[in-house]
Length: 363
Ligand SMILES: [Zn+2]
Image 1 (spheres, rainbow, N blue to C red):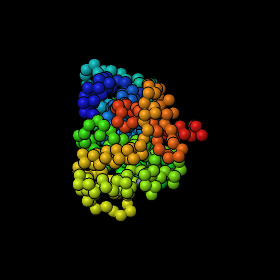
Image 2 (spheres, helix red, strand yellow):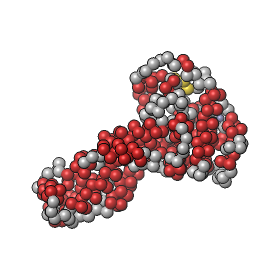
Image 3 (cartoon, rainbow, N blue to C red):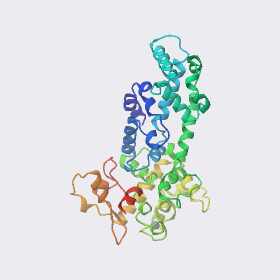
């Protein structure tokens, strides 16, 4: 990701002080992720992790311990303001001063007005000051100094309104929130350690897909009621990530293998599966955790005998047809998906599960 930041993001952010002021809205997710460079970042995350194209954007950012691009750019603008406002000479200051004068004449399309509107939206400047903006003089406006750290904290506070309630149970809450709640409660604490996994692309993808809810577990099949999302291997409970790691007897042998048994030596809190998952994935030995997840997913794939040969010669297909290719076997509830969808496939996000919105449209 640091290479991406140096070689790609830096180029895509050229002249950000001028143009990014149009992309600082925080009223809805569409505004937050509106900056063109944000799409490039998401594409890169999909390549790094192999997650689905419909994976929650918040989960993608959380998995790589990132924030929306607009936060970083807003901080750059705050620094730019702090430099230009008290300045007495120079072309940039002359332009800045002219822009402030334009705003004081009532213009709402100028840089200063848009930036101060953003600062009002995040709660940095109060509404009274903002509403009387046009009655101020240039000296008052230029005397504003922004604390960049506070700007960052205010943005993070504003993003919190898009966060599902943390009191929600990831195994019982509405599906629209379940994946993010699950990622926050089970995996977010170990985000930084997970990035240190030094395995092949294939192993790393399987690991991150598992963490991001992109492993095609029965739990992710929204065609079934919650209570029907039963593990096809043991039929003893719903098949989600917790079931794979701790419950399913099919992987009991693996849990006791010499390579993996030390992963289960931490002191679990009985019955508190949030704490158990968080503790398990936050352990230091991330490479072994990655190996264990890969081992389980490989075992699962073999036992379920996922048939990928039927679509082997399907050839390139459109995104829409790829989505339609995901089908449920009526009798075994086993996913069938195209060769491209196999988790050993290329790094593009070609594994698709119909998300809730699509299902609602279809039904
Ligand atoms: Zn099971």
